[in-house]
Image (tube, rainbow, N blue to C red):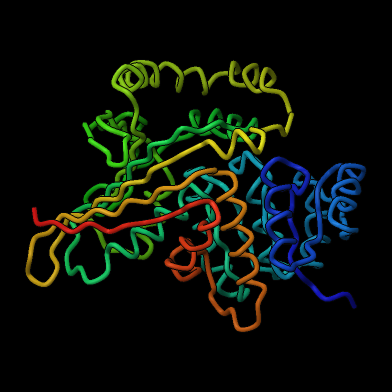
Length: 365
């Protein structure tokens, strides 16, 4: 019987190809899975003859057969809110560990309901192990150490970023879904742009307006940190921030109508994304702020993460996560946030090749 290893589902997509490359770089020989046999074969040849398997997220039997060959499944097929849950179910039933690259809050919430089933099966299910979510979730775990009482954790993203076709399709689907905030210790319905704050970010990013949006950290961070509030923001120039505040309600209404399908057709089914030289120029800064009490003192502390190439980082952290899950001795179980599934510092270190660096700053309120 062939030894079960790491499978990449959606291997020929934009993110899938990057993940496969990182796994091969790390010494693995992943099984390449997807719908198109010819594309799979071509990708397999690029990496010296990897094994392939035809699987379709709309065909549960093919997913079950794929999962039976897998110790770890890395799912790169989105939008995850449409196609992700059957893959999770197949992994749990196999059983196989599961990891994906989603940033979609509604999908992460739905997967968390499978925690008991995953524990009983003896597998770890780790959604949102990518540039967005994984870095901030792990940084929050580091920042929160030693706190007795945490009033709030806020995450602010600033990016100069070129999105792939898959990312654009996922954003469209998310706009039509219900978003949640975490306030007073519980999840509450909360639309994008519900909150706004002015920020002055370091390292040349300067004065920007941060507009709230329902990122998945809102549902992952409370899994491992006791806090009364989690908010996530996107930092924009003032004109763009006000444009988002004014336009988001109308866009959300349109996203809930049949017009969403027209927009998806316009985007098409291509799996294209930014070229390597373009990705190399993409930059980001993530600022985390915690307010709470530590050792009897009321504190406000910040941690800043910087780097380049969010898609490269996504591939690196996903591949390294899969390699850890496939290693002997990995024994974590259930539906886990990134900081629960892996050592937080190790996850941040996975992005070093893309200049990921983090620095903690202390200060009293």
